[in-house]
Structures are given as structure tokens and as C-alpha cells.
Length: 228
Image 1 (tube, rainbow, N blue to C red):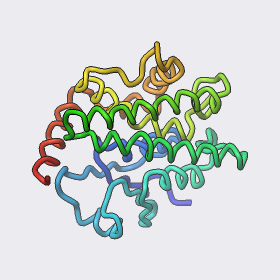
Image 2: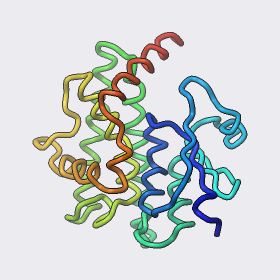
Image 3: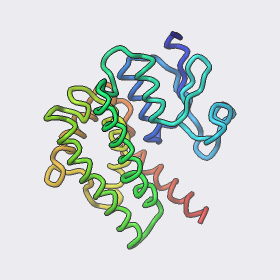
Image 4: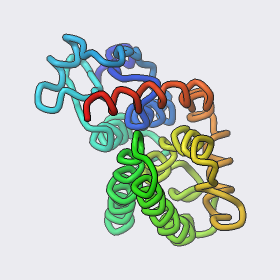
């Protein structure tokens, strides 16, 4: 196995998808070099490492690139196989974790992404879709956690990483839209989970500052408007 110093992660502090492998690497206590991409441009390293999608994140381990956030997290779990495990050992539980991680991306992230730069009734409709997805995840938390602290039980698992990586952007959405997406009244399970997740040693230093992320979101929204 290659030494920890052979690990690089190409990404950006603003990306929730980059946060996923960063959390996984922290859970496994892996030292790595974080190669920050400049917003609006793609480095030669990124283009060489991910020629198909040309997107972050990319993990480079012993000179070999791995792309796509969920695939990278699974790779980290398999290569650095010491406890705690990120994916469950039971095949059915593992399948459930992958399913709910895909729900996060398809049912929650898709409308959230589309809402950036949207206005009026269109934005309202997209935010309602995101709220519906959070309701589904509240129910899933009750089932998957089995009364414990995280979706993964006693430890942060695959679904925790998939959804928790969006907490910074959820706070930005709450601030800019004047509405709570996760709150103690409507989603008590997720409200407690979000606090525990944010305070976890593998996570707390990675969550972006809400004010800085809010400023970035304005730049992003303006750039999206330019394209339309």
C-alpha cells in the first residue's frame, strides 16, 4: 500500500462533493495534499486526471486518479480498511446506504442546484422539492440510525457524508431564502444529527463559513445568469 503522503485531492473549499472525500480521509486519519482549483478555470492537473468529466473532486493515490465523489469515498473505505468503516459490512445495509446517498443527489441536490439563480415561483417550486427530499431523509434517518447518533449508527457513515457535505449550502439557502430547511419542529431527527455531524472531529474544520459561502453563492448566481 502506498504511503499517506502519496495522496492528493484536487478540489475547492466551496464544493460539497469535494467535502465528501475530505471527510472520509479524515475519518481514516489519512494525510493528504489538498490541491485547490481556481473558480472559473480548470488546471492542467484536473484535465489530465479527469479527462471525461473535467470536474472536481479527483483523488490521486500513488499517481492513479479516481473521480466522482461517492466512488472516491468507497475507494478510501476499501484502501484504508481499518475501523471505523464508512460503508456497512452487511450487503443489504450497504445497498440501502448507496440508495439513500443517491436520493440525496437526485431528490435534494438537483432542485437545490437549479434554485441558484432562479426567481419567483420557479425558485419556490424548486425549494419545495428540496424540502420534500429532506422530509424523506428525516424518515430514513429514523430507520437507518436505529436510534443512534448517525445514519451510519454510532459512527459517521456513507449517507452521513453524502448529505452532511451539503450542510454549509443548506445554511446559505436558509439565510438567503429566509426559511428553515432543517429545524427542531419539523425535522427533529435531522436537526440533532446536523449538530452532531457538524461538531464531529472529522468534519468541524471542513465546514465552510456561512458568510463566505453566501458571498460565493452570489458570484455563482451572477455567473449562471450571464450564461442564460
